[in-house]
Length: 109
Image 1 (cartoon, rainbow, N blue to C red):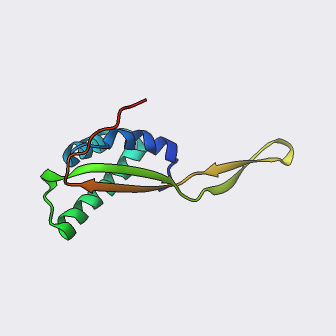
Image 2 (image 1 turned 120 degrees about the horizontal axis):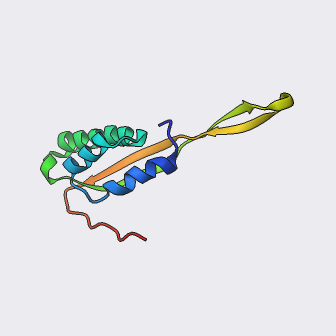
């Protein structure tokens, strides 16, 4: 996804250990761009669990949401007197792991 990993991790951190239905609500009503992409990935994971593993949605919990860095696009920003400053357009890889067992939340720092 064309999204910086640091910004996406803020949304992902809140979803760990939640029931799937509650996590979908959070991604649907959150205003951040990352929430939309994580919501799409979450819906895909739910669909895969239903079709491949025959697990009911009521029993699913979000085990983890991992946001890894993808390849960065290198661009340049025009500057004065013919100069240029580098600009790094970051991308992310989003992966969602679901489980049918209740997950304990980690204590925050």
